[in-house]
Image (cartoon, rainbow, N blue to C red):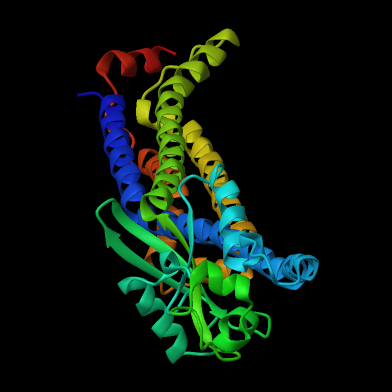
Length: 339
């Protein structure tokens, strides 16, 4: 088995190991990045819903109630109705996201909290200073990620949800007198919940991972191709200059171009690492970058796989330089003597 074939087999084995190791180690890191991106989208949707609630409560409801004198009921005056309708429009473009406003004591029984929603609200009630909660739950359709924020009763809320005696007749005609009353000021009465399947985050992570794996595999293919082509090119250039140099050691001939190529790969790997951390900073800010650079988190070392091809190539070139073939074929020796 020739030296070139041995080196090619070693390169193929190392390529397979590095690519597989990168895929395994980078998966948790990429899933966390994708999860953070999904949560960021959910936060934007949550803020949009909260803005609609405030706008409805402060401007739409007083305007309609003033025009009708409270004699007629319009669903558009209810903040929960307005935010849910608004989110339904967003859901036409973000189909995987769902929004719900659940309450412990709502007027509309369709908004009554179920068991896991009650747990979220109890968590907020037990921690009044908390303004956001991220939870996960297993469902028949797979694992679901929930982003929740508390609904705190304000002064306008008590107009309809305070004492039954003070509630407009139109509200009582629409919902009755049994549910949704007795709220107090600044009470945590419900929760806004944005839900998205975890599979959405994992799918985004898989796309990024496949892209990096493809690039890494392509780098190895390019490296192996150049490893085999560079010695041929060098011999051709030497012969074209009018001098034919007898090559006594093929590995020694390949060492220098392989070493130069290794440093090129190393520089490219460092550039890839820098780009990765720039992307992390853009997506999650300085806090996320600090977490990504934490030396005590094992998955953070996954990015070092980008410099592995260059480092290995430099080591291989050094080995070939320091261990050339010890013997020259007899006819080569005679040719050198006659020269």
